[in-house]
Length: 120
Image (tube, rainbow, N blue to C red; front, top):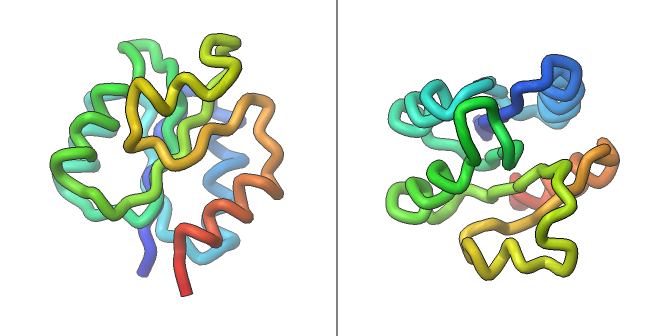
């Protein structure tokens, strides 16, 4: 079964993303802090990761760096509400990021990318 880790600290967004990924058939695991997310990455293998850039305890760049070493196959979707990196510069910071979505996220777009991550 395809697993999806959703790292988001806003409960309503977490709910929306979880619902969308569950409807696509993903087994969803949730985390709202970097510490919880790192634990999940150490104990599970994921097909897809939805990472909110800004969390109360820091940015998810450290998780992306960890994934670059540990799991090169998971698709990473970075979700951000920041106006930084308006021209895609974020991919220069970490080439490990597969997609960037800006808040508010269109759930249809998110679902289409997630389906692509599931493969054939």
